[in-house]
Picture 1 (cartoon, rainbow, N blue to C red):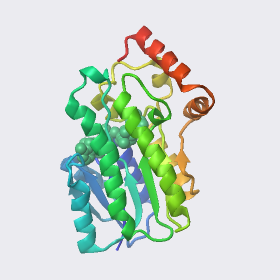
Picture 2 (cartoon, protein in one colour; picture 1 turned 135 degrees about the horizontal axis):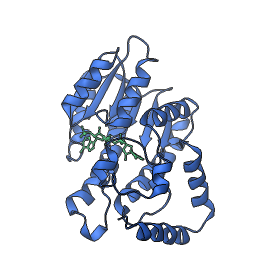
Picture 3 (cartoon, rainbow, N blue to C red; picture 1 turned 120 degrees about the vertical axis):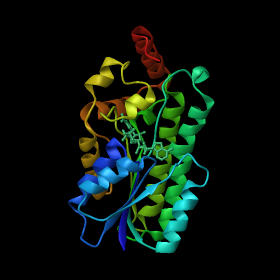
Picture 4 (spheres, protein in one colour; picture 1 turned 120 degrees about the horizontal axis):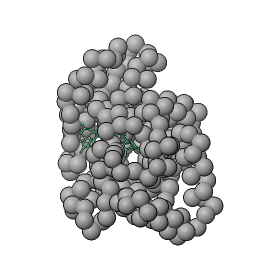
Length: 259
Ligand SMILES: NC(=O)c1ccc[n+]([C@@H]2O[C@H](COP(=O)([O-])OP(=O)(O)OC[C@H]3O[C@@H](n4cnc5c(N)ncnc54)[C@H](OP(=O)(O)O)[C@@H]3O)[C@@H](O)[C@H]2O)c1
């Protein structure tokens, strides 16, 4: 059995990955869709031509990757593709944000992503691919989104190093770094009604991000950036001192009273 595993499949970008891959997978293949919201997973499964197993799993739980590992051990599928898409963010000053939200972002965005990658790798072979959802927030420290940006810098760094380690084995890793995307993410983050105008103008659809990521993964690229403004931002963070950029972003946020 050849499978594609998608965490965050109940969300905007994860759902798009499933829908777009559904048209290209061979008939023998299927999906393992992971998320907490079973209703959303069932709704997505209903739209797919390929069979899918819906796995309701809270990735903030310490044993989440262990539970997936046990399932893999009993079924022994070939994991053709792993898409680690689950993640969330919370805007606001570090001092005023709930501790459980701060540590929860680290648990879901980093710890679970590493654990799931580790338990899936033994079931991957030459030609398998891994897509990790980082973010353009990982390019630069972000006051007011400090922990989230740090978790995504972790995902980007980890994924680029892993890409190099696994390249010789013919397993290709792509870190996806979108700017703002139209999904439920912004509402969860508490950012939906209060964004910098520049973020509104650079916002793209989840389908565009997924399509670009899949194309970059096929091309064996280690980083996927969607859209010229985000590419320009990435280049800026490579050539400009981060201290200056952090001050500039902080000043823009203060003028607009954005957390
Ligand atoms: N939207 C953006 O602006 C944007 C920009 C850059 C990067 N990203 C990244 O893209 C990824 C997908 O985000 P999205 O835009 O599709 O947001 P979304 O629509 O809010 O989806 C988030 C997904 O993560 C899952 N998730 C969150 N916490 C979880 C937990 N504790 N256990 C299991 N699953 C959990 C959610 O599942 P349940 O709801 O079922 O729990 C959902 O499927 C995230 O990693 C995000 O950081 C998003």
